[in-house]
Image (cartoon, rainbow, N blue to C red; front, side):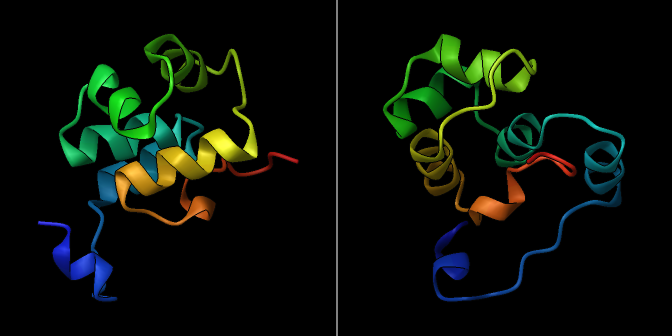
Length: 88
Protein backbone atom coordinates (compact mmCIF):
# COMPACT_ATOMS: atom_id res chain seq x y z
CA UNK A 1 0.00 0.00 0.00
CA UNK A 2 2.82 2.45 0.80
CA UNK A 3 5.09 1.35 -2.05
CA UNK A 4 3.77 4.11 -4.30
CA UNK A 5 4.50 6.69 -1.64
CA UNK A 6 8.14 5.71 -1.56
CA UNK A 7 8.23 6.21 -5.32
CA UNK A 8 6.91 9.76 -4.92
CA UNK A 9 3.26 9.09 -5.72
CA UNK A 10 0.74 11.61 -4.43
CA UNK A 11 -1.44 10.53 -1.52
CA UNK A 12 -4.95 11.76 -0.90
CA UNK A 13 -6.15 12.27 2.65
CA UNK A 14 -9.86 12.22 3.52
CA UNK A 15 -11.38 15.65 4.16
CA UNK A 16 -12.45 14.44 7.61
CA UNK A 17 -8.82 13.93 8.61
CA UNK A 18 -7.84 17.37 7.35
CA UNK A 19 -10.68 18.96 9.32
CA UNK A 20 -9.68 17.06 12.46
CA UNK A 21 -6.05 18.17 12.13
CA UNK A 22 -7.13 21.76 11.55
CA UNK A 23 -9.34 21.61 14.66
CA UNK A 24 -6.29 20.74 16.76
CA UNK A 25 -6.33 16.95 16.99
CA UNK A 26 -3.03 15.12 17.13
CA UNK A 27 -1.58 14.62 13.64
CA UNK A 28 0.26 11.57 14.96
CA UNK A 29 -3.01 9.97 16.06
CA UNK A 30 -4.77 10.83 12.82
CA UNK A 31 -1.99 9.47 10.60
CA UNK A 32 -1.74 6.36 12.77
CA UNK A 33 -5.49 5.77 12.44
CA UNK A 34 -5.33 6.50 8.70
CA UNK A 35 -2.62 3.85 8.35
CA UNK A 36 -4.69 1.39 10.42
CA UNK A 37 -2.05 0.98 13.12
CA UNK A 38 -2.47 0.58 16.85
CA UNK A 39 -0.42 2.77 19.15
CA UNK A 40 1.60 -0.28 20.15
CA UNK A 41 2.36 -1.17 16.52
CA UNK A 42 3.43 2.40 15.70
CA UNK A 43 5.66 2.42 18.77
CA UNK A 44 7.22 -0.89 17.71
CA UNK A 45 7.87 0.35 14.17
CA UNK A 46 9.35 3.60 15.48
CA UNK A 47 11.38 1.84 18.21
CA UNK A 48 9.90 3.94 21.01
CA UNK A 49 7.90 3.18 24.12
CA UNK A 50 4.12 2.88 23.55
CA UNK A 51 3.48 5.28 26.43
CA UNK A 52 5.55 7.91 24.61
CA UNK A 53 3.29 7.58 21.54
CA UNK A 54 0.25 7.91 23.80
CA UNK A 55 1.66 11.01 25.50
CA UNK A 56 2.38 12.64 22.14
CA UNK A 57 -1.12 11.84 20.89
CA UNK A 58 -2.70 13.20 24.08
CA UNK A 59 -0.63 16.39 24.03
CA UNK A 60 1.25 15.57 27.22
CA UNK A 61 4.58 15.56 25.34
CA UNK A 62 5.68 17.17 22.10
CA UNK A 63 8.22 14.54 21.12
CA UNK A 64 11.82 15.24 20.30
CA UNK A 65 12.92 15.78 16.72
CA UNK A 66 14.51 12.31 16.71
CA UNK A 67 11.31 10.66 17.93
CA UNK A 68 9.11 12.57 15.50
CA UNK A 69 11.41 11.60 12.64
CA UNK A 70 11.11 7.94 13.66
CA UNK A 71 7.33 8.23 13.83
CA UNK A 72 7.19 9.99 10.45
CA UNK A 73 9.26 7.22 8.87
CA UNK A 74 7.09 4.52 10.48
CA UNK A 75 3.96 6.24 9.13
CA UNK A 76 5.42 6.99 5.71
CA UNK A 77 4.85 10.74 5.98
CA UNK A 78 6.99 13.86 5.97
CA UNK A 79 7.96 15.30 9.35
CA UNK A 80 5.96 18.44 8.56
CA UNK A 81 2.79 16.33 8.50
CA UNK A 82 3.21 15.54 12.21
CA UNK A 83 3.92 18.98 13.61
CA UNK A 84 0.67 20.57 14.83
CA UNK A 85 -0.14 23.98 13.40
CA UNK A 86 1.19 26.77 15.57
CA UNK A 87 3.77 24.63 17.36
CA UNK A 88 7.09 26.42 17.79
